[in-house]
Length: 221
Image: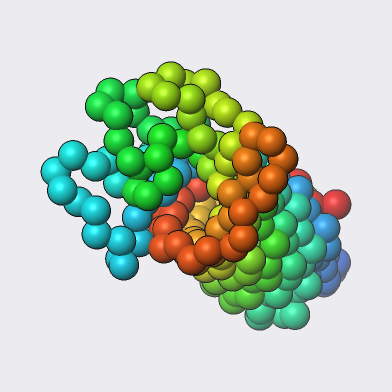
């Protein structure tokens, strides 16, 4: 009686494994694919690029703050690799100090405004639920001119155009919920001024760098 019982138990386990294996394979295949949205939070640093040398001991050449915003994208799981497109809208608390009055890396006293990004990413699956990736694309940001030595923004602003590259790690907690940690570098090389009266300057060359370290939590549909 014992021997048949063992055969029944082994057969039951094998049947369960046969059912579970396709299910696990299906879960792995549906991870990192489809549309996604996410909330973004992290560290933001904007400053003078390598071609700007105004360090005379008095000029504050960078601003730092808290980056926050939202992102969205669409990914394609190719098996061992993932490719996708993505976009972001973020803002930042970074702004010039009020004392002493500084030229702020060539822009005067400013606060970091909204940032728009659109690009693509590609990565490899380090495990069924861990993606390591690189990214790149176009970025356009805004620097709001501050009034005198106050924190009040004026209606004059700089709009900066440039490109962004980065790298990160994404972890799928479930087939729908995920978290990311990411570093990004942005280089802005052209700008224009939007004046208070609605006029716009011609485009001119700049050299402004931006470094960000961010974490994201998101949901796939």
